[in-house]
Each structure stands twice: as C-alpha cells, then as structure tokens.
Image: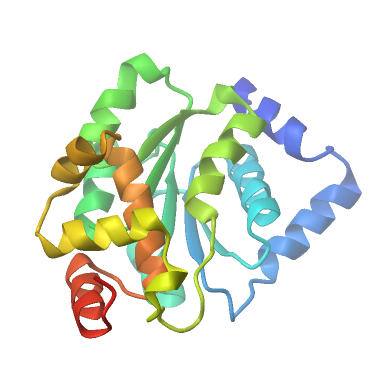
Length: 230
C-alpha cells in the first residue's frame, strides 16, 4: 500500500513523469567519484527513498548517495562505497524494531550524523530516537520544504580540500569550540555553556571537523595546538 506521506513528499520534489523518472535514474546511477561527501539513505519505501535522494541532489550536487532498504545492508555498503558522512534513516525497516536501528548505527558510527526520517508522529519516537543517538528527528509528513531545511544544515559543505591552519579563516564560534574541546568538555557541557541544544553542538562540531579536515575531537585538538589555532 502506498504511503501517503511518502507520496506527498515525492510529489513536491518531482513531477511523476517518465522524463523526470529517467533524470532521477541518471542522477542515482552516476555518482561523482571525487565527491567530498557520502550519504547513506536507508528506507525500505522506494518512493520515499527516491524523494530523499532527489532532495539531497538538489542541496548538494556533488554528493555521493548510497541507497539501502534495510540495516543489514550497511556493512556491505561501507565495504563497497566507504564510510558515510551522513546517514538518513527510516525507523521502520524490515530488520529493525522501534529505535534499534538508531542504536546500532550510533554504535557502528559514533561520529556520523544520523537524521531520522519517520512516518511515526514525533511525540511517539522523537525523544527515544534522540536518546538512542540520532541527531535530529523529522516527520515525513513535514513535507519537502521542511525536510530540505533540516537536511541542509547537515549537507552544508564549506570545507576546503586542505586543513585550515589560519585562525582568521575560522568563525568565532569555531574558535570557541576548539578551546572547549581542548578543555575536554563534553557535548552537554558545551551546550550548557553556550546555551544551545546538544543537537546544535553536534552540528557545529561536525562542520568544524570538516572545516579542519579531521575526523575526531582528539585530531581537532591536536591540530589546534600544533597549528596555533587556540
């Protein structure tokens, strides 16, 4: 049975014509080997998966997108395509129950942003998803505009190919974060001091890591100390 919210989102982002379907197929079958960002879209509903992929393509034209219909396919996808930079996850998959998919992915990818796109009402699973390790919860019924707005915060790629070593090229907030990381502060500590949510902290750190071309807190702190960024 066709999922109404999936059909609604799909209808907003692409006209259901043979020409547009062919264009989408071309986009999906021609990933850019030089893409700096790799995104996994995990959803067993083909229509919704295509809609999310098309939204991602519009937001980040050079993104390499891997489509999966179940959680068990993730390991093979990593072996074939490499580690993801962002994961878009549907909660209701053939091999998941509740927020088990979020927990499993967070354990496997501790530093990768997880965006949950679910047909379930936010009051049912939002808090559970965030507690399990998701970075954000979006209802599929929110529509293409809202989904795009949220995805854009994770797909914004302002990083340079080489690591930044000039403090003047970092924002005031990024410099603040480096100091806090060097002090060993947790995401919760940073959130409390800056009076922002932990989710926002995760997004800021993710952008900072991409800006510095590093993969972890320790790498960011080491680079900051050795390159005079503090």
